[in-house]
Length: 215
Ligand code: SIN
Ligand code: FE2
Image (cartoon, rainbow, N blue to C red; front, side, top):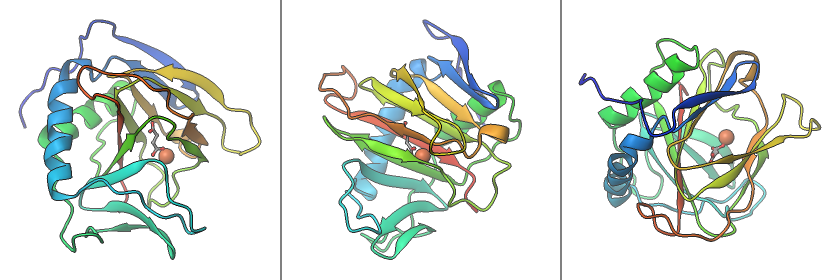
């Protein structure tokens, strides 16, 4: 694998979020344009779509996936699927740059040897939000979650492992990478409704890459 330059960016620093969770400020900044180009290539094969929750609601966040396993939601529930239900084709492979970035960020946060098999790609437009939830559809909770922010800034909600714990509200910007695992693996998290804006690389959107070991 090529040795990608990850850090340094213009403002590298690590902020602890909780025991087992950290925010790597600017970790992906220098690769933002390349990451967004790759997202466009993936979306040309597996288009963004608004999935339906098991409760029958249309999600405000548009989603697609790359990797061996793609996260999908429909009336029957949440699951990982090797194929895109919209096209019937396998999800595109996770690009090499994505793998290097995810593994590098995980290692930086103290989780060695992270090899994700699932990358959920979230696209937020003005007003889109993700309510507080846990990532718990994966087989193996010993692996962390690596979450890369691109495009418009957002307010990241990060709570504890019980829903009733009031979440912290953290402003996250393009290039920031959040990693949570170990004692924080089942932390409740979400995204507050996106404020309108314009980003030079992503336009009117926020794009998020969520890497997981799902299988
Ligand atoms: C997620 O929880 O799947 C995404 C979080 C984010 O968009 O930052
Ligand atoms: Fe999540």
